[in-house]
Image 1 (cartoon, rainbow, N blue to C red):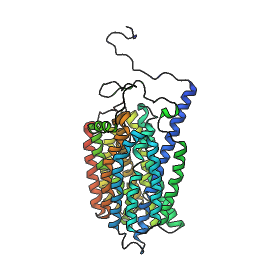
Image 2 (image 1 turned 90 degrees about the horizontal axis):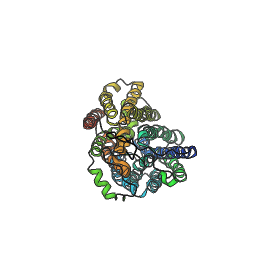
Image 3 (image 1 turned 135 degrees about the vertical axis):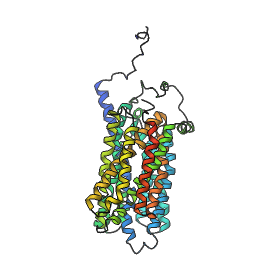
Image 4 (image 1 turned 180 degrees about the vertical axis):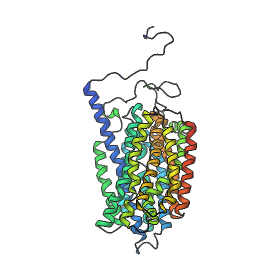
Length: 447
């Protein structure tokens, strides 16, 4: 045969041509540089995002503002923030596909820095509401564009492990930001305003690093895309030819809305996100309610267990999905949701003992199950389902739907009892697992 194959035998898959050692080293260096700068960028967003959560304890005890900034009002402000965040998620992923992540993320970071500083210098309810809406739009520039950015430098076969490691950024942010901001607010300045100002200053430093070290894609630094050769779609079709005209944003969105896996991930994430945001935004308040004998700083530190487990979970579940399940993301996701359901349902009876260490242990297990499922659904599974051209749009759409659910996570703790809250979260996690189960054997579109 002209191509060197025997009749009836499928040709071997194409492989990228061998590169010289210098080129291989350069490719590896850029991969890890982009990994590092995007990891730091998304973790940096949390030092502004978590400021409101940390400040709530001080606000509720501040007689100068607690008559207007009540727990109900704080819940409504969270809802405003999360509504703006959801709107931004639907937009910025598509913008990243069209204009590149750099311009979107830089604009978002700058907006987040300014909005946080404005809140830190104000006590006005109107200023809080407007600035938190701006903060929501600014924060939503992070996830989809940065996911697209880092995965453009990573081949599909390594995506679960690399993106699983990368997804530790938001767990780390949720872990490190509260005690850091709480220390500035309650130990250094004894003022809740300092939480916002310290977060703003931290993200400003991260913004400078991002401007200096980030690039959008391998072509920007003279490298080929990792899966530029030899990839085929899951449906059996060939990958697009290099000279095909790129799809418009509207065409990409149309394809995403017809993608059953993207819609399934979106539904599951809508059900999962309220629990995560309730613990992120109200964690210190929930701990203080269940353990009334602890002080403000300790109530801020105890939820760190939730974040520590969240750092370990994405790495673990990403490795499992690549190695044990052959790059299938749904099986470890469903198993994580099962663990999460059990622990959310057990939260109230277990923490009724009043034991600090029981609270730490329960939050750690909840954090592991929640962040494992979260990282798969919002990260690598969404990237896998969107393909190369629509990765940002798919991630943005999934996260937008999740962010609509997250509005409930910010709003409901101000109105419901902890018992009703956690049993409701347990039911939602169980339903998310049921929704995902039919896709047990699904693999990546570009695998």
